[in-house]
Length: 435
Image (cartoon, rainbow, N blue to C red; front, side, top):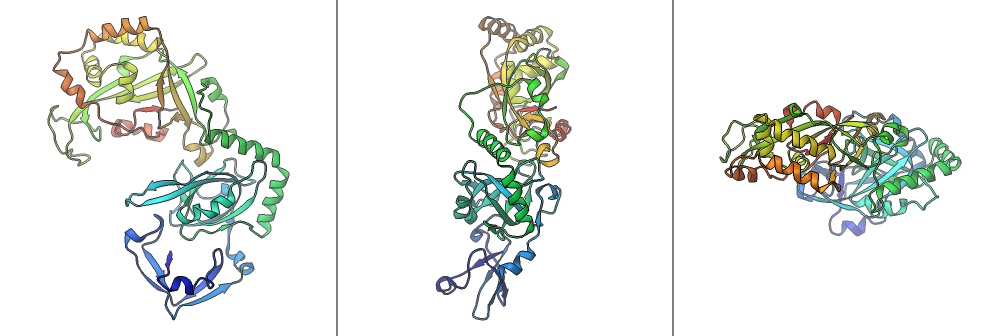
């Protein structure tokens, strides 16, 4: 809960309240707080204010330490009430250089900074989002020197589903820079005895967080051989692949809402309020889902692409793909098959969220810039494109084609979400890769 001091109280309480100290507070006024005055998106809807009747009773930190219940990172519940809070001990491996500004759902701008810690039990480093005031001096003090590590305690953390499983600070969080107790001493001793392993892990984290500008591709066989215990949630790899055997029946083409992608029976060209997403200004546009196997010669992975990415791969508009599918245009599809077979492109992939949740490694496409073309034979492109273009419909299709180019932001997709694609389709995702 937020505590507020007003006017002269700021100076009056300057010596009475110290950061990282524990107090028993009596006779404070608890009142609702206006949303625009909340300093943190995790704050409660109430604030505490002081008066002349308020009593502050300091609690000795040696006694207070018994109230801190440090839990091993691996023992934190993955499915929990987000109001529950936990205390942890960790060895700091990474601190984001600068805070990022985040716009919350309530349209408030907050500062957030990521730190990563690990303990002697968990196989995966834990990402912690540090919000607002804590991201300033406290995070700066935590910044590790390469090869030198420190143990810290963090109290009153909440579980978050960011990156699958992570934690976030609350308004009650305290960062304890020199934790005491048997658990803290045991972790510090383990840290001292494992400097080499910690240095290697820290180096890997910084390499992933600050990658070289040169794009290097990875083989599918290499991904297949990786183990969960040696893979980090933030890893990203580029694959250079082709689609060796595209199949017409695996193209699902239908008319859907331009905003939520649900099937629509409204005639193209009309503007309407969608009965599914309830958004006004919707139009009916072609929507495409394409299931295929990608290959780089060392292995294969199943992949699903949606409208915008399928247009890019097929080098056709969504309208022309829709027509080809429903007219069973074998000539056009045969040319398309050859185009996809010889066309290589890059897909960026990373571990699915199951890695941080269950320590299970599966690969999926990442959300940003997940597909990019590579050089192919110009002659093949020209010949295939000529056959495809010869089957397009009359020029009246152009209006509908323009409607199909709505902006779609790609999001991460998990195998669980893949099972729902028939219902939810591709409103938010242009490409999905799954194992």
